[in-house]
Image (cartoon, rainbow, N blue to C red; front, top):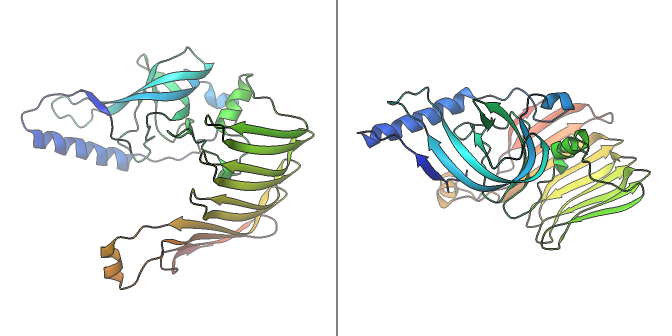
Length: 304
């Protein structure tokens, strides 16, 4: 979470320790109270009917606002997010919105310089987003690197869908190659089309030129091997598809940076790079089993 924020309103209290206790208690209370029962994938335009402001924005400044009336734990703390509107889809152009999720388990964790698709709702004359249960999604990190939804198997991100719903869809070739670039000139995505559908390799790069992911498509559907890589080049995800559904084994790798105490306690050196999850599917894409490993290559949990 980004704590480089400015507190613009505080309520003076005699006991500073009491103030700290209340804020910690609020944080814990709100964190435990938050659950997300639904997906944040936009399925159709009716999902956006109640939204007051939908736009692609860039985060310019963050201000943390505390509201505490005599220590009343029912009062909320929230974050004012100042933005630059880059692409407007619904509502009037805005320069700010409020984030209710900052002290919850569903916190958006905004960082200055990031680009987001923001779907906000009007409450008491102010525009609010309510965490990852909503439809807002990060598009680029503070370095300008695109957050590719490669591993979700979605050909359309929420941003793609919003553009299509509101008649601002980005043009794609019927046949040929489509390339997009980072601001520094580095190739970001390269994808091939035949008859308006993805066919062949689809590749992603980090802003530094390192390959981020490779997929293969056939008639607009994932087909064959797909891989995603960490910024250092190590494999993060290795999986296979047939006609759009997942088959065989899906391997997910993790990186771990152990501390000396951890190694001394276990009397052995943990792996810094290891298989963390393994999922198995049959030839028809039906899920069979999953396994989760610790960084000693031992099965920690499994399910069927």
